[in-house]
Amino acid sequence: MTDTSSALLSPVVADEIRLAGAVPGDEHAIVALYAKIDEFYGVTSREDPRIRAERTRAALFGDPPVGRALLAWDDATLAGFAGYQLIWPSAGMTTSLYLKELFVSAAYRGTGLGRLLMSRLHEIAVEHGCTRVEWTTDTSNLAAQRFYESLGATPMKTKLFYRETRGLPHP
Image (cartoon, rainbow, N blue to C red; front, top):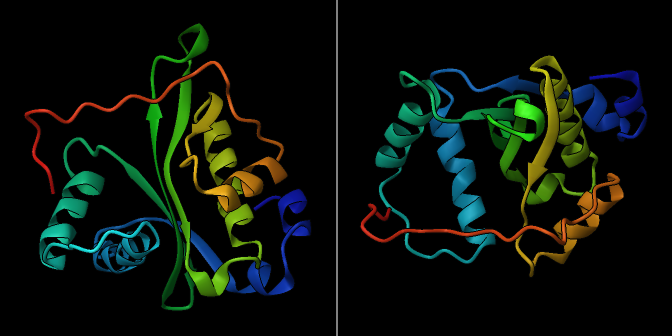
């Protein structure tokens, strides 16, 4: 965490939250937090947590890993999560950091934890020579849009998001 980012945080978050990349064994805590993400998005059917844990383990620690996770721990409680990938090519044949999911548990919203996660993601992007950090948010998630704009981000009016699922497994 940089001095600039810590100045933006409440003292509780700056002093008590530990950010760390996911390590083997974290998958069960990630799956438990992801159940809260499902609730947030109104997903009612959930598969067996053991299947999700195995899928998480394969994604984060497989050979090769297909994603990365930045975790925000308050002692033994997983308070927040950022799932991301490094993507190539980006503008000028460079690399970008793509944030797929940012989630902060309800009890930690408004404390600066989301800002802390975004600050660390930016640092990770710099460490990897990325030229940009990119993400999407649901058009209906106005709170997320306000949060991202409070960070100085602006929505891109020139891009559309596409998804293709035909013939692919559906969890």
